[in-house]
Length: 548
Image (tube, rainbow, N blue to C red; front, side, top):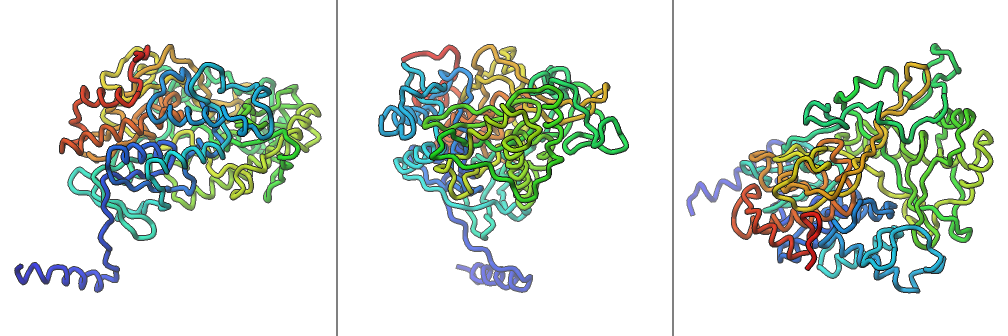
């Protein structure tokens, strides 16, 4: 070895010391780094192990399983025959669990009247959060997968690239992970952004992709809408008194135009009507009665709707979602979330919890709420036997949409409606194009209105292109994004379902394993061979599904 070669490492250490920086340890090396232990991340790590690859599964939010274990037990997918592979295995395991009489601890199986457990099917599509947690844990144990806590260092020095490929990522604790293949399985898209991939936030204009349901949508926003005239001003009729909290000051924007606003987030609460397992609604610290004035005025104007949607889960529990003009969606409070710092996201999440807890307390206690509605909210409460570590409140905010990759292909309304057909599908979407409301504004008649809600069914399941998981060539050639898929805002409203994320994550790993095996770029994976491998794993790629 030459003298220069011997001295170079010493010189590097000396220069680092002079610069006041500690020398970096060598990164830990694995074949596959999965960033984000969402449902997609768990499935991706399992699939990687099944391919004989070494894998690091990084739990970036402290809760394994994503929304599937954080209250979203009422699985939305559309036609469930479109779901196969490891994703369907998860729901089959749910069925096996609930087929055991011992699993029904607070009601009899025959008394369960909600959806998701119909006879004659091989899977169960509604479930308790704790059961989802245990199911993912069992799947991970079977595969020899373990999640490890860690968050990406989102400073520029948090990633290392080698040409057009991602070489390593750094975590906040200073550790680094090098991999041949990376998957961003977060809801926010932090890794793809740090790796230099193009992304979108908010709504595109209809004109961008020739769509009809994107951008600002006032005409289509006829659901979850005010059904009676509600004055938006602090003092009714007095513009000078200012707008009530949550009402946007200004027009909603030109119909179909682009903006950076986000569809509303909420928490998917697990509640129960079992008196032995029910907690009373808590009045949160920092409660502000004026934040619910629009709701109370809506009741006084004649609304009688109990503004929530509690879907029955086994054992007298619910997955509770938004319903109505003023419900659990905290409209307008999340615009900065996708690209915000960790500290700012924590603040936004805490604000959503404070606001939603305050909403529940108001609905159960305020005398301006109709007695029948108050009675319903007092019949339910948070389940004592769920989420003990977070005060029985779901640990994760429901991030319906964060960043979206702008990749090699962009899924749009045309794919969802069957006007365009992907020639390289790696999974299928089947749910309606569904956007929750985005903003509240003052209409021309001086009353408050919601904007942004769109619910349009797709005619049948449609293929999601492999290229929609790939960044544009040269941006990051060894990264796949099965959650923040390259799609328009309105198409993402159909794709953004937990079973679909799991399907796409498995397909991404199969493609990645094929690329590693052949020593080729992800962009050069031969689709015919990828398709054959996906079908061998019971992935569903075309409609109608071919039966074996």
